[in-house]
Image (tube, rainbow, N blue to C red; front, top):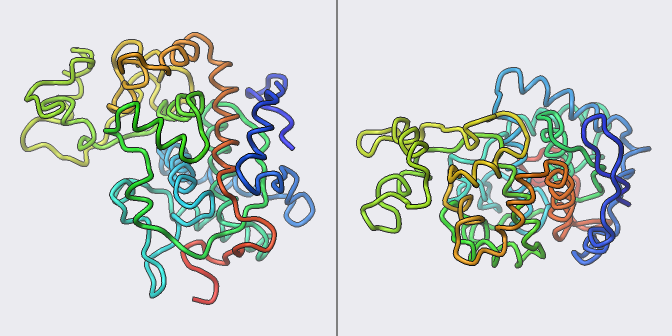
Length: 336
């Protein structure tokens, strides 16, 4: 099903057998196929790419945002497009969960992709698959790996606000909690570190770092793992008083819009923006520290593992076959 991982124009590298075995362990994943739309909507990847390129002209953050949107979808009820549903008489939207509210974005671009696909092949491509393809295209267009995306997901007809509030990893989670939340969806340490590497591009609000700057763990002091120069830089953007909690900061201060291994070299220099980032290296006895070191020294190893982890994550409890539906509008259940 999964034939290879690519690095721009480089040669294909076969995924490890363990990854292929992992797909079948996630329920329904064996029914997914990267050729799923070859006959029913053969231009699906080109259409998604065209819409995303156009969106990027007006919003340099959109590639990172769409990658994150896929992540936040899959951790709640599996990869079923539930995060896209708006409030209705039957739906309490996940968009207003604490980890998502005023944070996840890119919904209008998903709408644009869906509209383009409905014009080309009506009623064929699910919103859940749109999120999966958009994440892969976003990473590739930012200089990261490309991979063949297993497809054939169907859209869910429910949302789960409670699960979104409790199951999504938090920027303030320690390593133990992060590992617990990843393990709950069948993902291990390599997946955790590799997927965290998506913080090599994108932005984050001041509200997620101010405690590290001024009152870490309610000590009244900065996080001791934070590099002094980097802390001073962030303090300039996020002052202790009278600052804008929504002010944006680069997650990667070196190459903020490129998908590369700099996230991991930043961690080695104690310049991880979020507590959950630095925990991967700084937590006492961290089982993830060696993986951080490997990815910091070998970008191809990171790219391979990231592609494999995205495939693993994309295979969390997908709806397939006669399950769910293919929504005509990603924001609402058909017939509502």
